[in-house]
Image (cartoon, rainbow, N blue to C red; front, side, top):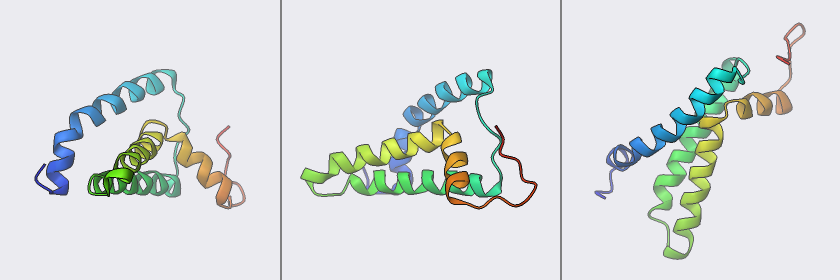
Length: 105
């Protein structure tokens, strides 16, 4: 581990992509995802970026907290990366819908 953010994720990218691809193929085949509007996409990718940031810096946290911080970051990333409907539901829960905007259900 060289301490570089890119090299850290380059080392872990195969595991992340493998998990994401397995979930994506099942969800894509079942057509289980709602179409995301621009706000939901921003929420999703912002949440994924924050989770990656937490996972990386959790590596450098004190020994008694580092493992749990990294696990929390990993679960956060996987929740938004593998289940994009989470961003959809969060934007519908906390955001206002404009008149005429459909719910997607």
